[in-house]
Image (tube, rainbow, N blue to C red; front, side, top):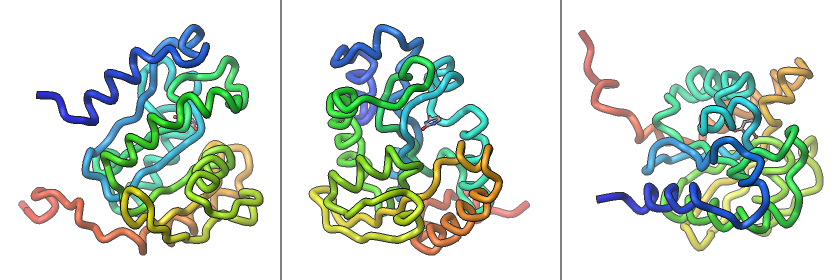
Length: 203
Ligand code: URA
C-alpha cells in the first residue's frame, strides 16, 4: 500500500492549479526520507531539476549535497528536500504570488507528514514564504539568515533556520563561508537519530 507521502506525491504529479504545469517538463515534488529530522526547502526547480524530476540535482544541488554530507554527516537519503514550487518557472523567473499560493498547501502537507524537527530555508524566496506562514519576522535574507527560531506549530515544535541559496554561493564566493557556518549551526540542532545500522557496523 502507498504511504501518505507517496499518495501526496501522486497528487502533486497531476496538479493543474496554475499554468506552470503547461511549461514544465517534469513535476519536482521533493524527495528523501519520510521520517527525516531535517527538511531543506528551496525556491523552485531549475533546468536540471525539471529534466530529471528531482530537486537540487544541478550545480546548486551538488553544493547542497556536499554540505549535507560534510557539515551534517548525513546523506541525501537521510533528509527531505523540497521546494516552494513543484514546477519550474519559465527561464527560472521568480515565482509569482498566485503560483506560491496555489502550490504552498502541498508543502504544508509534506511538512505535516514528515514532521521535521528542523526546517532549513534556502534563499530569500523560501525564507520569506516559510517565515511569513509560521509568523516569524522576516526582513531580508542577509539580516535574517543563520538565526534559529523555535516555534510550536500545528505540526509540532520546529526549529527554523534560513541561509543563502546554494546557487548564490556559486556566483558569490564570500557567501560560501557564510553558508558553511550556517550549516555548522544546523549541525548542532540535529540529534543524529537518523543513523542507519550500517553506521554502526565496521568491517
Ligand atoms: N534551486 C532551487 O531552489 N531548487 C531546486 O530544486 C534547484 C535549484
